[in-house]
Length: 172
Length: 143
Image 1 (cartoon, rainbow over the protein chains, first blue to last red):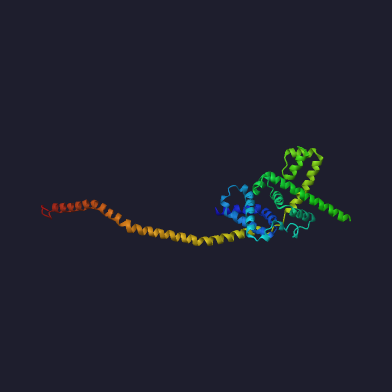
Image 2: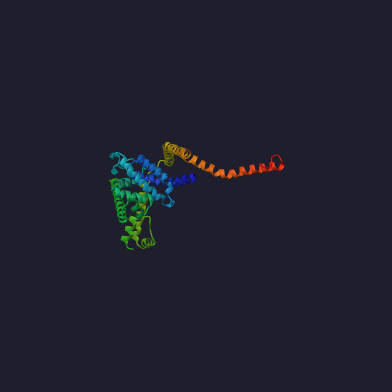
């Protein structure tokens, strides 16, 4: 019994920790806070693991838990750390990927309205359908499709704008 | 499916493509171009979103869980002891009450119940002994 519980938990960690961390990092804009939230999420999952019947739904369940943890974290944290616009990791703290294009995309993502950005990030990271994202965020499916399409368009525009400005700079 | 539908669907759910979309993509050159550019964009987007994950994240998750469990057990232990102690106390009180008020009455009933059973046995054995002695001549017959 005890071993099966541990095995189930191990499966959850192996399967979702990376995506949860990435999502949390985009939500918070701070890798340390993101890690805290992920750990809290897994702690909550561990305590409620007996109630989890369908392992297939665990991924969705974990993301729901993470969103709740994020909300609680924002309540607990001082206001200055909890502003969604303070996402610095996307563009400024860039030691991990020197690729300029990646930086540009991250900057464009950071410039998006938080709701649009969250929907798009969720879709890209998790591969959830618009229905699932709508349920997760507690909004209508049409709102999700609008947000996702709008966010994609904006990022594309800023990417093409950056490409054009780069090429004109190179020509000059 | 027209081009507008194709592009709208592509923008909302680029990962999902049904047969109808596939057919349109095959037939329409501009949408094919759009899809090709879209795929490249999706790759860039996926790369941008893929933030580096700390190498020991899983290990730290497990460690956090273990430490939290230990704390929880430590917090629960006094409560468990208190529950056991109160249970034992209640049991002792119940036993005390039982022996104080219920046990003598039930013992008395047992004694009363056992007497009628034993009396005939004792009388029978006495009568048997007298008859034996009479028969062997040790006692006069009037006894």
